[in-house]
Image 1 (cartoon, rainbow, N blue to C red):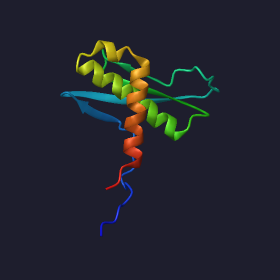
Image 2: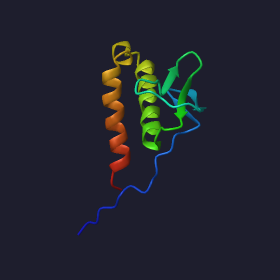
Image 3: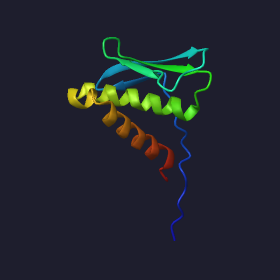
Image 4: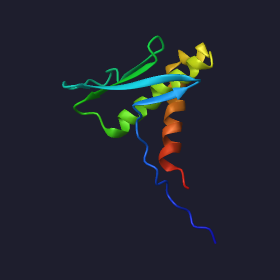
Length: 108
């Protein structure tokens, strides 16, 4: 009889990581104003190897984590030289949301 266990490894946004042999920094900037539905939540800068995330007053932890994975997905597509996917926000969103769901629901 096997017993399933929920994932006990909490997902945390890193301060730094490596991708394709390149070191990336993650910067979280606090934005003290209310945010509209169309506000930018982060960006990936391939020139400085940086992911910036914007923490607004009303942003949830889940939203910030998903935004990190969204920008990480851009970085991965950039690294594998897939410009079509890199520029496709719908594809990046779908991939990063599925990755988030996997990380949050995996059983170990």
